[in-house]
Image 1 (cartoon, rainbow, N blue to C red):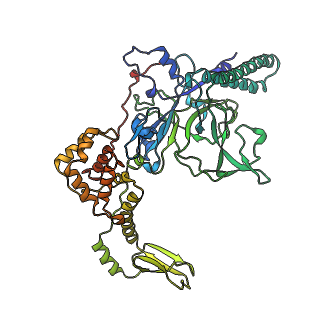
Image 2: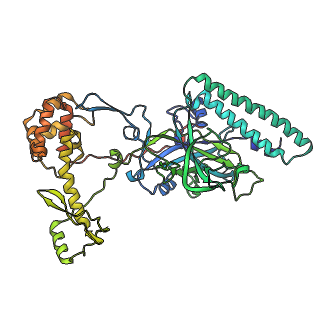
Length: 562
């Protein structure tokens, strides 16, 4: 075996960067043997940021990131004890939750490339011809997890398959004795691949648990006859050029765990070049890669559905291709051997109106100054205020007159096209008025008393005494409410008066809203804890805080050494 052959038999490992490796925790270096072995199976990691400039932030300091907080960064399980009571909420065992760019949260996937050899040396960046990652949709997990028998056998299968393909390619250019030796080796590798594949199937059957069902996003295209279908995989030379890609169209299709030929839509990974002027940099003596995690996409499937939504679970697998000397540096690299990482932890996307996401950076709409608005409207003249123009075709103006606040259709409709201009401040004022007018009606009609907690004004509409402020502080945080304190609070005359002063001016259906909520509490429709929490939210004297928590730095001598 030549030196080139020996080099080709070394596998690569795509793992988490060193600052995410297990900690020594007081154990002498290099650390416990099980943890050192675990490094080779660690999946790439997700890092969280609070601004769109996350790439520059990462390059300047790869470790600087926001900490994941389970209470807000995991999907919660809710259960309501009974109508009118506080719900129970837990994030224990919940899947990771990623917020959207509109929530001012952004994410990177970060990985490191190492040789699977003694000492776990870093791979040479010059040997990498392509690095990227794919996003997959998942429905279950491998039995036993990444350290289990199924995952181990799956990796053995992929390794055997990769070595067999390398031998096949080398066989094409050899003759004589060298060719005979490679043929014998290829037969042995093919047998090893077959045995590994059969063992994967046996383990999956023996597990008895549902195995992972993976779907990858396969881009769609059309053939010469205009018939749509999936685009061929990279490296499928027989199907090359048979379809023309459709921009932004694809489908979720079952895929292999560790495919040799990549058919899925892949995102690029960028390499991190260590600054030679900073020998102590986190990227020094490392082969690091990173990519921006997509939490949204304009792609649609063949039925018009979105590629990503907030109801499915996703995971990321990173990959790296090792350059073959006989391949050109430019152009495609589909035939270069590919090495896959373990999947990242599964995650789910937050909904657009997720309250915790929206709370990261609330939007402020400035209401107009009526005195200034009046002066400008009279000074600028008809149509001079700009705004939105609505053009109505003939017969489509929806003309009406009002009689006792009721709209009555006006005849005849407009005979010619009509253009009406409404200044944006006018639309804002009317929208705000309608919101305040209909909010108490919605709350009362549907008995959605908890919606009162979504309204907050500073300064508060009703002043509070210090005794009531102290009671609110003793209630407890979040949904962990002290029932004894809550019962005392809702019976305090100062609490009853404050809620009446706040809500009794609102009389949907000719009944004061404050009286309605008091009666709902008296009849058991709202328990004391819920009533006290609603009162605290409606009468709050200051806004709640959502501090950013940055992850602590890790030094190299604090982690195990593989």
